[in-house]
Length: 436
Ligand code: NAD
Image (cartoon, rainbow, N blue to C red; front, side, top):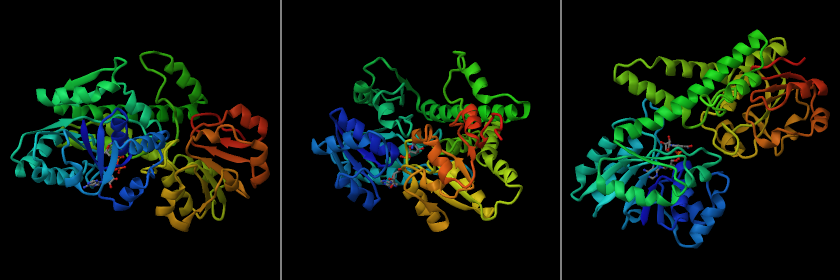
């Protein structure tokens, strides 16, 4: 099949590459000329494990090409994926301007029947709006389908190639057949394709993300209570996670969720509810809890330094919003760093992949170093914000040698408290006893 993917971000590039991998001919189009130039040179513009090998293979096989011109990209395409940004607007609603602008352009460009697919996370009613925009300038037949994406950054290739499920929202029999054909190679193991109306498909994506965000905020509240009553959140997590009705995933307490999806999707769902005269109480609480949780470490750090952080040298391990990505959108690290800078601290940070992206927004307000141990030189404390695997079993003697004092604030519960006691660290984490 000849496929066009509009937008080559975390979703679009993975979508395009994975469809090329299953034998389709994919043209990816993006307005970012620098990005397209890089991709034409065979450079993957984002960090996503496993993407580079597949990317290179499909370029070499002639199945994956790039352009900045929408009219060239859609030439002969049977399906057009829209993998465009839907950032939160000032009122929390998803900003649909990227999607609707491209839909309007498509109206005057498409010449034969084509299926236009909303891959972006979009509020209920967007497929209708996209259809109207295209129809304004279009005389030929077309269908608009909602096909939300559930991939996780960091394991996006695996998620896309072997999805738990594929959700397709359409009432068109023709579009349904095409979509089933397209996804057939990805559901060989019997994972289902759920065909539904487009409104339900659109809402499914928000419901999934909001539910996962709710699990995280719930566990963070349990963790905060654990600290007050002397319980250990890791024990509670294991105690409830082995109950099949609850499941053991997404139960880790920490410094809150970030990323380009959960924060904006929770906000957008609250707004959809509000627009429909429904007060989605639980989601308001999910958001409020996360706001507090992002900087929950700050009072602990301040307390340790007796209220005065001026001139303290703080090492930060981890900037990305989660491990195995370079994505820093809404990353808790940014909130923590800004709060610490406001207190007059000096920040030295290390992240295996996300430093270039943070440099773009923080410039020289903080110092970046090339490895995790250099961040610790003369540090008065270490703050762990992202649970990269390399942080889990570090060389402790090397750490102790470099640090000014043996002080760790662990926002992701990376270390065991027993181990910290043995090593003589002052160690504070989330929902567990303080080691002094
Ligand atoms: P992104 O910001 O990484 O990528 C969007 C791309 O679209 C950028 O490269 C941008 O240059 C390009 N673009 C903007 N306007 C364009 C235009 N007119 N023509 C062509 N290209 C244009 O975004 P993303 O993280 O890939 O997310 C895309 C959508 O998918 C969002 O709605 C998001 O909520 C959803 N989603 C994201 C994830 C994720 O993990 N990132 C997972 C599931 C769903």
